[in-house]
Length: 217
Image 1 (tube, rainbow, N blue to C red):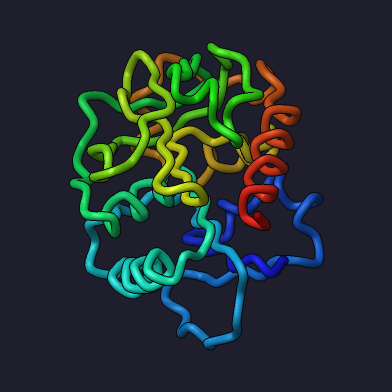
Image 2 (spheres, helix red, strand yellow):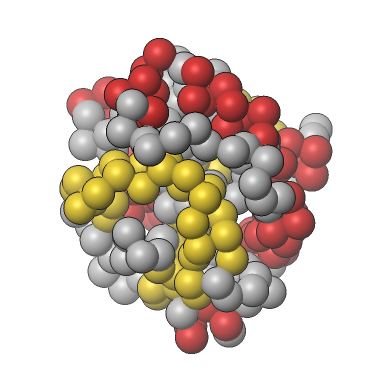
């Protein structure tokens, strides 16, 4: 299995997903030319930019071609928004910033889903976003939170978007909070984020392993 990983900032990597994917993935960083090397599936990571920014157009075209070719995809945060936009949905400001640990509730459809069906509901997961997306036409709604209705969706059988961050490690959270590009978001918080308050590693492993099984099907 060869996985192309679209990375938008060097500090937003695969986190808990890295070990399971070791030897089977390569990063493509925002702004770099696409080399045309073949891949079997696509993971689109998060970032502080907007899916509506002009600089995202090459990625949107890549995603659109992947959808047409039946490429399995997993989008996280910005990645979920980019895939949703490529599928024809609107990406827009959420009513509030959602930053930190918060419960994610899974829908009845998620209980039957091959990727999210093993995840308890609710599950406390990490969030960092100011934008959200409308549900793409034809997609299945899979999860919600108190601050954001669209937390997960499935399009077809092998394309998934997750607004939350299952991959994030404590070290990543601490690093994100220290990044200059995130200072504005951090300033809105009532207090510092406890990066070790919850351990999503087992959930991350389940989600990735389940998605990889669907990608290989």
